[in-house]
Image 1 (cartoon, rainbow over the protein chains, first blue to last red):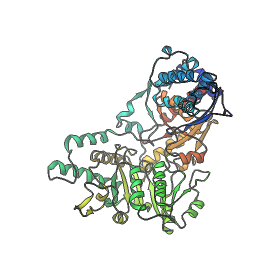
Image 2: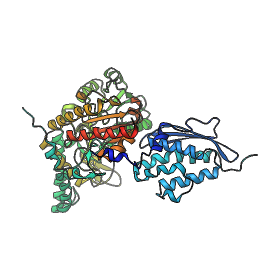
Image 3: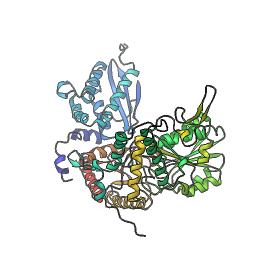
Image 4: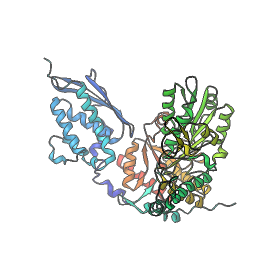
Length: 156
Length: 410
């Protein structure tokens, strides 16, 4: 068991930025008023997340999350909200699509543009049992955009 | 009588998988409550059956058919002897879950409806919770949940109150898969029977860990799984009092379970065959016989003592730290299972980091969501022990937990 110190360097999963989002989540809380609030639940582990959002003028004007779960699911939620807040809805869908390509399909983050800090979650894909944790808030976001009717033409 | 003490270093040589390396470390398997590892003798028994005896059972007059039937029925006798049962009451099923569903469907469903009550306990595995909830939904019975006290044991006062009319059946686990609590089934059965209440026991965690004598326990049904007691997956046992099994309708219909079939009407085979429709898991039965033989050779009192020693030690190594919460009763009253949480770190993160050190534990709700709610947590880390675990492996768990604290700055 002597290699604990050796593993401390360059942790492929628990990157410092992930732990930082876990300890100090961004956009934590519920958006009010919200166009949609979606509850995501992973029955395998009991992780839960609520993603609420408000769309104005074709943009995600506000987004927030609450939940309980492991560092990967909560950091993923925090980084997600930071990444997509203020973006046009079609750009949010683009980020969502690229994030899933990286995590689920194993596409190298270097080949996907605009992922920013989210690249730090790339290591998750080597931990098959943890992929669902990382994707949980993103699935909630996807359903939230659908429910908010966010893709319709913005009203004047 | 002095009991021999288990020498796990010697027993480990019988379990080929224990020489595996995981993430660059020797495997430290502390997840036997999920499924146990299998000794070579069990693996050989399964393979030998297919190599030299494979045929269908209870059909045909050729030599292999007789060999296969002898193996299958021999397993029934062996298992019956192991748990102190009349072999006529030993029904082979897939696993504990199927056994409990059989009781719900074939025993409870025709008997009870509106105005009747089924009692489950707060520590039940979903396998001894959901079938009763489903039954109550179908039949309009009331479902009541017997609470645990602060000490992780059933609250006897509340339980006694709940056993009053109109309660018909109590579903209870012998050993909790989360807390390791050993419940006094003999005492509970006496209390329940005084009220005319039937008792259906989930013995999945008990049969591999403590000596079990179903006749002495006095329950009405007792289910357990082969794969948690060194045997293969796919075979389990439901023991039921023969007179109850006699009176029950079949669970599944098909081959083997019949006596005479005509277009007008079918009559049933005698017990236990009435409940064994279709070709059973014969290879699994062969493996289960070998598993029982292994446990008998080691001795269940010795297994129990060894696991108690490891659990005590784990309590010291893991539980004494200020940032650890251990769930359940004190070490003296529990069997082979230690559930805990490390402050500020989710169980899944603990599990992932332990795995990097080759330490396999379970992290999650352990199929016990009602109990998790009672404990006020979403999940726990669970280390569980078997006869092949060593104190050095508990030390490895303790050291790996140190790495979890380092990563999370906890």
